[in-house]
Length: 172
View: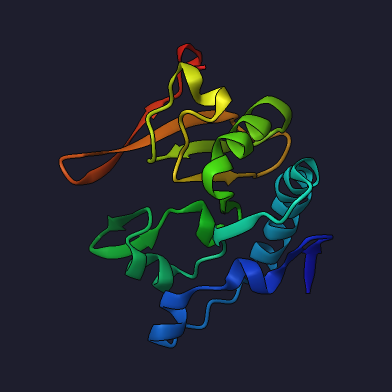
């Protein structure tokens, strides 16, 4: 099934971890609608801008898959609750290798999004627009035009744990 001209449902469901552990990683009908929205409003415009294939390194995640890979979660009364937008079909991790900074910059400057995260890699710096700084991948989420927060963050490791700070335009 195609979510957009250049993105298939199989691509966003693909997971070596799910396969290794025999996990069925299929979205619900509601999550499928969310995947179609992010494909239309984020993936396809970015892919069209690039004019070349755009790799989804992480797309849809079932709650069990999210738990296995250590995705965003919380515990309520001792019960695991996945909080990652990947589990709702609202997030994609995009990887264009050494050109992840182009993906990040294009989305930041041109698209309506919920959350955009510069994931690890080089710290954002003055030269990022020239490719001197590059994230390891770009996390982006999309909810709806009315509910998107247009929040931009930078992910980094602190004492072995993933932490986030708000993006500063001083870094561009």
